[in-house]
Length: 237
Image (cartoon, rainbow, N blue to C red; front, top):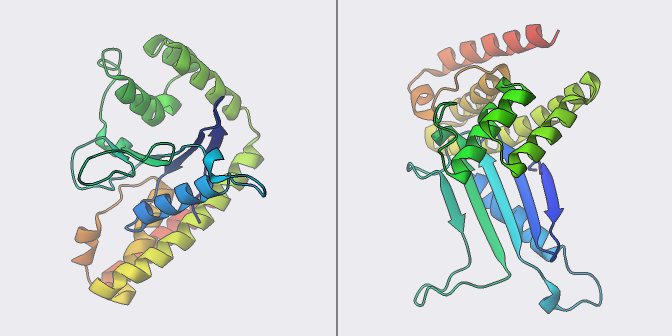
């Protein structure tokens, strides 16, 4: 299961599914496609015709790399291979890999709209509302910043509950992907690597690459995993 952060409909009925993912595993692209297709097909109600289906856009903001290139934004559509014609009013999937953006306060004003949004998503929590309004004065950012301030006013208990629920979902998903990847590198090592990466994410530590962890023995991986689990328990105690 993937956590959908926002599902919205505009004035003409188009659907937008927006999600932010911290943990990005090998199966994410297929998972994004599945939920985009589900959102598209869920529009149809009994007695309605297919002509009433509206375009559905899936926007995935990813805190880790998914594609092996330096392109920040990828857009996928249904396209005819020979003519290049696009099937209109269907499904689009957009991925924005926030980890590929490293802009600073100094150059954000002259950045593109996409880069400014990447800056906002990556750095908004490190600035006051006044600082954000000065750095990004456009109306869309002012609205987003005001909404962020409202979210910050949610009670601590609600935040802790949501964080715990998402952590559980991500943990379960990581185990599934670890089992699949484990066929190539050894089931036990694959599971240990998946758990270590997730624990590092939850602790806010540097997440080691799978390639680096693969070179470590199973005994060392197990020891590292236990150490991270202990740190997480102590932090949440």
